[in-house]
Length: 363
Image 1 (cartoon, rainbow, N blue to C red):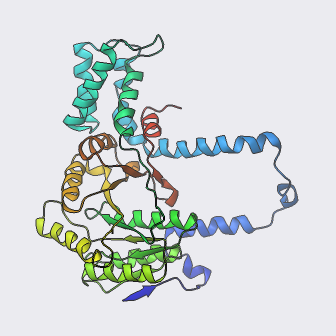
Image 2: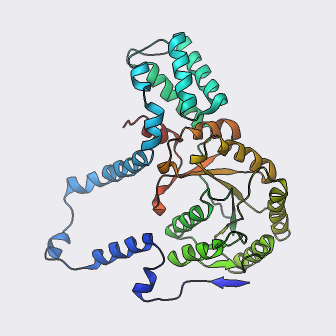
Image 3: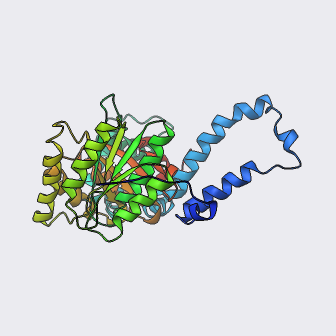
């Protein structure tokens, strides 16, 4: 077993870790440079400016989400506004056109049927006010579908809290782990990482780079080592060091390869020899760009290891953001996080209404 932790390095060496590190280092450097207006900058902010900061911060956060979902918004709302603008009744022609649009937006057949049925019921009840239209009713229907699975990940007093991260190769597991490590470090928690992906070339090194960047120890063995053994050692180390959070990476595997899924169940079985309650969270990472294939991945992984939460990544690089509705409908597991960019803060807690508002470009 090896324990990797960042050692003090020269600034030029630290900047070699990644482009993200470069940007952070440059920002820090700029923040510490004196300027001609330093005295003026030190003066307390005026009342109106200080009061406007929370609103500006909130607007900025939503703006990043809106920007990250731009491709999905183009696909989702293309033609939709003109189709239902101002309409207060769901006639057969509109219903058919709406069904086609939702399927093209990657909601899938089942989720689309649920949305349209809920929409019919809402309109049949004649509950629309003078200001409401089909488009506002559709927004509320979509929000309700997602709100059923809106639940943030809490880390209770149990220590260490073990998060097992699973998913296929390329979904963004290791990057998600690095962003989670950053998040929990910012919250003042002690974090350890376990490099359980011992099969993919450079997977261990990639996780070590994230660990160095955020000053988080990484438990790892050589490439090709037994993944269950790595995670067993990591759990023992986290217990010995009273770590708050242990995030365990696993080898990517195709959901239709039963022998590989069996290896994942072995990892869980071996970890439970030390603590029968682990993992406390089995987080499935799904790439939104895979569309409906992500739904089948979710079902297979849930059957193999019992998924307790989902992170949907790469929403900024795809027009298939509508797949979240299909995942929420089919899997019925909490959507913990969504990824809308490369920066650590772009891994966001999932908020259903914010997501739907960003898709419809409103707020």
